Length: 445
Ligand SMILES: [Zn+2]
Ligand SMILES: [Zn+2]
Image 1 (cartoon, rainbow, N blue to C red):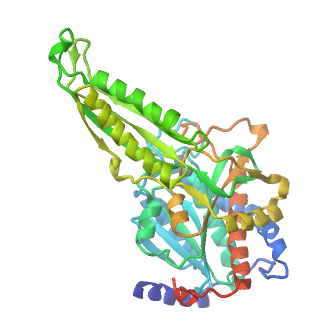
Image 2 (image 1 turned 60 degrees about the vertical axis):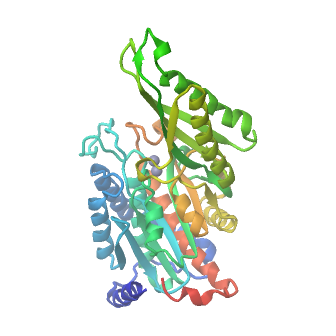
Image 3 (image 1 turned 90 degrees about the vertical axis):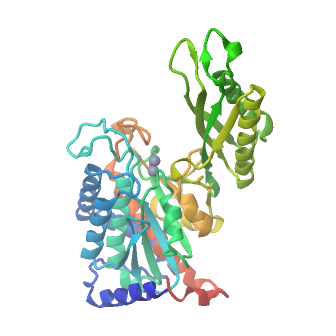
């Protein structure tokens, strides 16, 4: 904990040398219901919008894959430094954790992911990716700009903040479980709640979509090597054919969801990889198959994992082959189910309604996609939501992970204002709660 004492000291020094606030509203309990609209108005000011757009475009031009976000991380640290916001770095290779407020409990975190995808950008525009084969095709460039925008607004109001807002810039969301690695460093111990968002082309601009409880599935990968005995394709009796065995394995895997799972408990098993053989007249020695499986509860997930292994090895044996199954692909652990905390759902609804009006809060159906925000939400009461960016006049935007993915930059003020409002109002309301018996654990972050 010595490390955090040091952070605390830097934090205190920064508070004394920081510039005075320039915004004209107060984050007090009396005007609490006006905070979200005030933050949105502030976030929509042209100078702040232009600044966020500039950040987003800079990050977009220089996309970096998971755990390689060195320049992105540097840009974030430079901006935090300019704002006199103290931070910890490096956290899980490239991660940055900033602090705004009293430096004391309670602590509420707001999170942005920073990584890009191995995709060649197909959109021709002025700020197209300058790195061949890499692209921000999931909107994480926008997430970085929004969190920095929130930081700027919060820092202007740092003297009103009733506790500490923790800014979490995390590496490697798309693969490699950056959130899990950040948690393992211990930097996020004692956080009382964490909020995360994702821009979405599926909902209109000015709307948000979310739900209480499980919102995104838990997700795992598997790969199996099925070994037989290769030989002449015209003499199958002298071979043990792994292609036929793998084909039967794939058919049997389809029975897991259709015959063994509760039809009301959504699950997926997809075989998306099949590699084996290379000639018309040769039966190969082995075949490799792989894919993903998804479920909405830990029990269903573990059950699927166990049965995938049993079915692959058992079915391969029926065909006289043997099989090995690997669930730890590319050091990427399974992602847990993303579960939205019930109390934070109420908090979110209140804040979002005050900012956007009740008709712009959309109840989202659970989705089979996954998010490594789930690691945070597994350890800390967490809440994840979508921020709409669809503008009908601009036509349908592409979904994430497309080379033609476009961010509607009008979304930036909404994300920044939601981050800032959720955090400050959480801290205000936390003060009214009875003192936790574990309060002594919250002495420092
Ligand atoms: Zn993505
Ligand atoms: Zn994403």
